[in-house]
Image 1: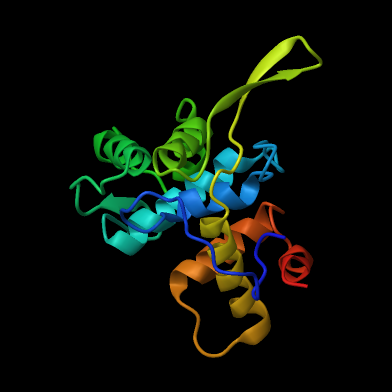
Image 2: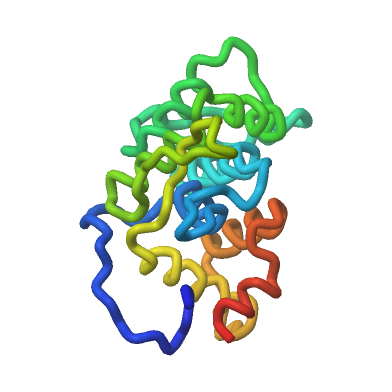
Length: 196
């Protein structure tokens, strides 16, 4: 069972590199492991929220102090992730300022957003891209999990934040948990059940 705290240690197939970004972690939680299909229909909006949170944490953007709470682009240096780079470029090139809510909607409309995030996880060896038939007629792209270790580590982190509360949780975990619960990707009961 994925996310088991006492499961035997296995070697992760994930290719070496940087840690997973919030939008990548969120998509892993939103996918049904072996099927590679999404558990929610609004994944683009929570993915956009995760992208904005990642850019805020990295210091690329900030919320202005004025009454309208517009987003200011502080650093246009590429964050090193295709999806983050594209979102930051859109924000830097915007003709008019926008607040967080408006940017969530704009970023959610980036063409093939969920597929771009999934392909990044495929390149890391966590997911596999494949075609699937629906009703033997329609073809869709699915992303079954190849390496369960990254998702298991995420679930361990979320479980610890909810049920163990050993100390102050890091802001990334709190943001991820908030987004996942907002999208009903992983309600608290499911995280607990994954560790039962």
